[in-house]
Length: 323
Image 1 (cartoon, rainbow, N blue to C red):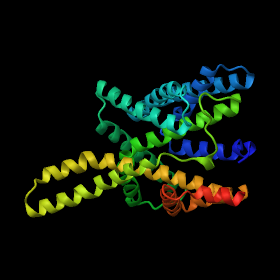
Image 2 (cartoon, rainbow, N blue to C red; image 1 turned 60 degrees about the vertical axis):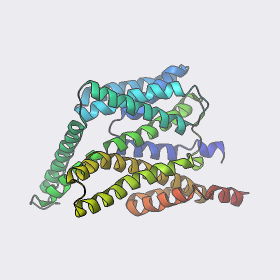
Image 3 (tube, helix red, strand yellow; image 1 turned 90 degrees about the horizontal axis):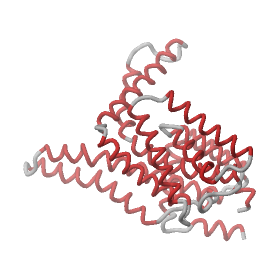
Image 4 (cartoon, rainbow, N blue to C red; image 1 turned 180 degrees about the horizontal axis):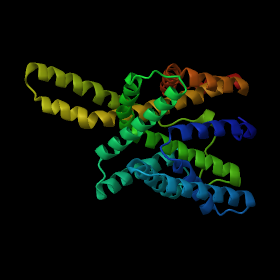
């Protein structure tokens, strides 16, 4: 792939838009970008303008944001940025550095919450209330425009989705954190013409360690196997119901978040494989638009391709086709 293709802005803009859709805080991207520009030493007017814009928008968000969830996301942005800057002194791929930085930041945020007495139940409750408020505003707006029924049934069903979405907040932090750091590194390269650490590289070459498949297996096992055994033991009367509830309450959400993280990573890997086969770039844009309208089916297909790429090197065939 040529340097012109690697530096094409279409993919970077699309990835940035996806980040702002899933990220709980824009600081996930703005703080790393500002830090990279500041550490590398802005030497041009363009770099200084971008640095000032990133800092200004970060300050605006800090004055507007409120609530426990926003505080946790903002703290996550700062902590993972510091870890990423330190790790950038090592010659590792951007994704590897971003993954380790996010892991270290998650551990630090967990400790920070424990020190300040912030419980997971409080964060989940705040996110559920926030989702319910947004749902109510959307329904009220639709009623005024005559687009939604006047009954509360739709609102109740929409609000019921709040708690499952709130439970996946750690997965959102991890996924958006990794994506935010990689994009910040890529945009820093575009703006400054240089990078801190190894460059992010092209999307078509994205891959990660094949050993990640074991995390996927563990997540599925935690969700499925303990529940089956617990149900059998409860039916036989040989295990207390409290132990079954304990398993669901504590290990279930952890496995669910881990499963979502692995599923998204494999779907992105599958998209990277597909991008090597889809030509020209206009077809790739059409495929991206189709992904939006057929999201569940496309994610399943891309995830399957990404998982199969663990054992089958599809991109080797693409390179052979190019040659």
